[in-house]
Length: 69
Image 1 (tube, rainbow, N blue to C red):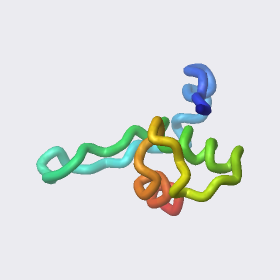
Image 2: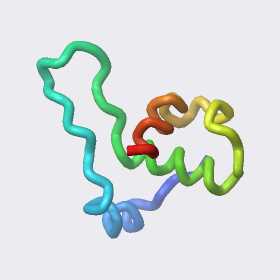
Image 3: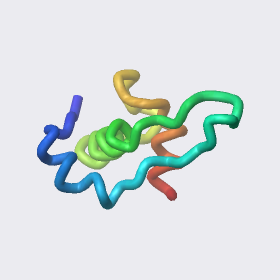
């Protein structure tokens, strides 16, 4: 499991804006950008396919969609 240290995240967070979804929208709340970035870093480090992303990370479809954005 790959996790960013707080000081690492503070240095780069301005380059990864949070996903802005209105509170009035029904459905799930947005996944924090830090969790998505950590999942992408895991994929890049392991070379695994998206669907093999461990369950300790957000859903692989969410991570892949945000990665493409």
